[in-house]
Image (spheres, rainbow, N blue to C red):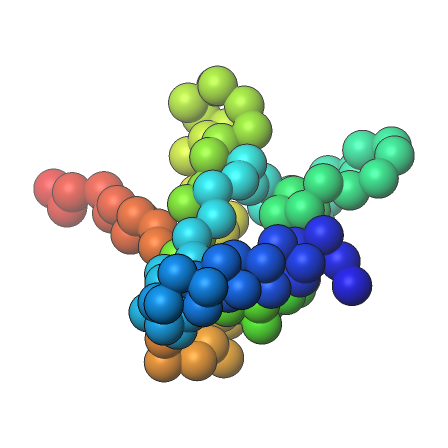
Length: 120
């Protein structure tokens, strides 16, 4: 059992012990997220969850959805505004639609819609 699975199981047990319905608890995770461009070389070492190719980030989201997480809050991994925007665009283009198409009705992945340039 993974650490995340154990923590979700423990939280459900705490809820039951307190007389609460564990299904009424909204599980949210807040983590740094980066969708790496397919042209970018992966960093050395172990890949942090929610950081990698679109397929890897999608797999991480689905793993946590299976544990009952219904809300995701993603923080940037860098402070450079251009890089943050590019990451958000990759997420919108390569991840969000695939998660929404395959998600259960209870799960949600929040993000900001891509802004479009004003027409002249």
